[in-house]
Amino acid sequence: MTETRLLPALAAFFAAVVFFAGCGGSDSSSSSDLAGFAAPGSLVYIEGKLQPSGTLKANVDSLAKAVGGIDNLGEFIVSKLEDSARGDGEPFDYAKEVEPWLGEKAGLAFKDLKDGKLSEPVVIVESTDVAATQEFIDAQAKQSKVPYRNASYKGIDFEVGGSNGNAIGVIGESLVMSEDGESGFKAAVDASNGESLADEARFEDAISAASDGSLADAYVNVGGLIDASGNGISPSAQAVLKNSGIDPSEATAVASIVPGSAQVEIDLSSDLGGEEAPSGDASALIGSLPADSFVALGAAGFGDQVKKEIDELDASGIPGQVPPNQLKSTLNAMGIDLDKIAVSLEDAALFAQGNSKSTLGGALVLTSNSDEAATTVANLGVLLRRTGAPGVTAVSSGGASGFSIRSQELGKKPLVAVAKGDRVSIGYGLAPALQGLAVEGETLSGVASYKAAVSALGDTPISGFVDGGRALSLAEALVPPSKTGFQEAKRYLKSIEYVGIGTGSSDGLATAKLIVGVRE
Image 1: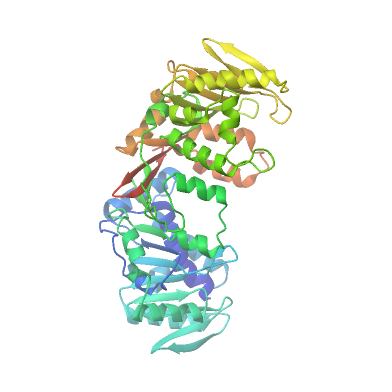
Image 2: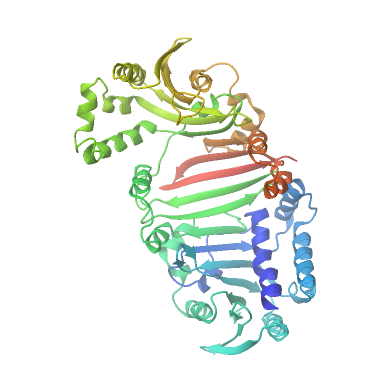
């Protein structure tokens, strides 16, 4: 049963190790031999080590122990695969049938995007004993309940068949299996003898930025995916990406996952298609947010992006409401200067807090280099009240001033916009809005899990944070007990202490780092 024995033993084993281990190892991942079997133009390519050793294996097992109570992840995966095969009535012995020839690395190549989904992959697995690998393939094809047939292409013999019509054979010193059938296998043969993904400059440049020593890296041709989807990305989303320094039509990305003894790290680098990489540091603002926030996100240079958005909106106008090139002048006549507001804004951060539906709240916090934004909040509140806008009331508390809006659409709490000093806070509920203005008292910077996230990110400024315990408490309150999937997942989620996200730039590339901290 090639589908139930071979595919889980290789593809599932590979996927499971990558899921828990992410990336690691002792060798650089700046080049890829297995990518030489991937067809040119492949949109997604993933490569990783199958048999971690040394510190990497120790870290993988440490994470597996902390998250799932598993002492040896490799042995656990193999036992599950063998149990599954035994249950299907076709016993499978990994130690005898695969381990003797299984190489160090494996790859998955997805060439196309069809109907919004990636095409079936080509699986490439290094072999340490080609003859033993071929014997294994022959035995599996012979024992399959659904017949296989012999095939040959350019001097390469392979097998085609089974319930899914897979094609499998040995090319060079690697086992290659195409879930796309004969055509996918032939494409791998062509790639190995001619042009392949590994030969493309775009791939080479991207993969060279992968983390050194990674066990598994994922390459994504972002522009290719967009083209293949029929430009299935909205104009507004394209504008946001552009204003963030990303030209999606030319962008590529590489992600690497690095396991530590008590954390999993994902490193991301992206070619921005010639655009300037974003820069800035909003960590000070994020650290000043309320201590009981279960999530906090920040962005530096927020005013610059707002300025670009305003200019584009002014030029295009608002259909049926404001003609092109009239937005700024119209609001300016009302005492609201959009250009001055944008220039005055610096960083932005968003936080959410609460442990139930009734206590859920949060706010968007903006910092300013002048009183322009605060003046605008006051002017806008006066303007809304003068025009008789329903549900609008003035807010004045502890030196903060602004307005609130109540409506059925907003629910039980009002939307509150207040300003004080160099801050503007727009919150769901009065308390979160006022907390967003506070610069003293208990803040995230004093919370142990936040400090651990900042420490784990090192020199990379933090731009996002999730408190694992608080987030899980909210989820437990919101998800009904009948959702068995969540109830089963809780035992794993309980081990997550924090999620830390950091962003930056390096050598013209946008970089990001995501770290999941695990309780030991």
